[in-house]
Length: 630
Image (cartoon, rainbow, N blue to C red; front, top):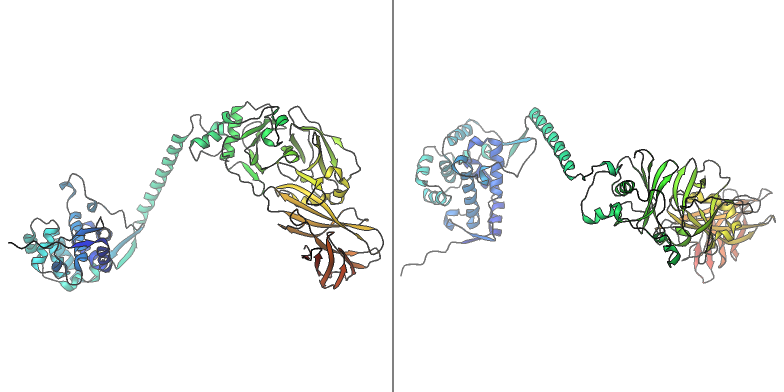
């Protein structure tokens, strides 16, 4: 029986990769020498690297065509496989394009690697290397391959013929005979002249590159303009006013920007709803049917252009609505067209001049969970230090009063049939010394509510009393009177409500009366960012003095209704005292540092020097320690 044919060894991709990485410079040199010199040195370098990097098997393994002994003693089947792939593609790169109906990948300039703005080529050799390069350029591709396999790979003629046959050379014998006409120069083949891994870099033609760059930029600009024209809505950019060009096209986004899908509440929805919030406000104003205006407002909300003035209270997202929002108001207010929209989390106010859309403004305020007094008013317009509001439908009467004059009278603020109030001086816009603080007093079926403007879309509610059970400030105006000007510290902070709590009283050491200690705490819509002020008010002073303050502190809040603060106070005789007070459940107060003293109870009075500093500590009724607010 004849012997069975020898099984061709299988080459795993891991084995081929290991051989490629280990012998990469040698394989790239082989490809560089076989490639036709007519390509130029820079393209030969890049093509040699590209062909070598594409020599791995396409699957997990491949059969080696070359028997293992012919692969060289230091390479193994893996090296024999990748060497054959490099040689085959290098020979293909030298074929004329006209010999095939379409070019092969190796015949085209490589996509990768690429180096922009530089020409790469091996280091120049001497006269011997130049002469050898000229002789090799005169050979055909198969003859160059035979010469390189002999001199660089050290293969005998039989092995060279096998490799050339496997690479697709039709007449390997002729190639060997042609290669024999060039004297062997094995040492020169390993010189730096033919090393595409040791390169020099030089710039390309700078003037031509500049011209090409200008042409590319002009082409890119033209493509962008054409693309914008293709995606432009059918009625152009005009109806979108000050909005930026569209950035996305999807059904959900388009539904949120369609004025025909705006939701509205019926005029009587608030009367039957169990929750009095913005969701039951009816749509009011003379322009609620102006689809062009509503389209502009929605488009600017989603894509405010560079000319639009956008503002948002802290913690309020300014992105597009998640779905069709609710229309609250659309009409003319003073010298502007105003649109109020509500998406369940935010109130958005869009305003533009009566003529044109230049100078449009977009304001956001977070109002999630707003009910009752918190959803009773929204700012429509600010001008010349005055403010106008849109009132909730359940508000029956609106008056304005000076919070600093609790015994003073009120003035009725006219409200039009569509809920728009008359203009009045806003304390949030006043400049200079604080001499008054106007607040809104709203009346309705649920009673009286006190609101103040803090330079936001929605006014903040004022309350008094212990943090766990605050009451509306309209019932205790005297508590707020000395501390009204301190509300300026909470402007534009996203404030939901401000509570004033008189947590202690302290007899003055010069027997001139009893001082009050009040904590004012501003709560925000986002939860964080609270601001706490501990204020001291002596009977002879008109205003309270801020003794301590803190941000993001639980003190004076519903979770931790405790507070301790102190102040240096000068009596009428010129004597300085440290006065400190804690909430009613404080059993002792201790001062350390520049002043050392301890008192039982929730107040401490001790003589001090001007400018003295002390740290305050106290003990609560449940033995917990408390530190002074600073």
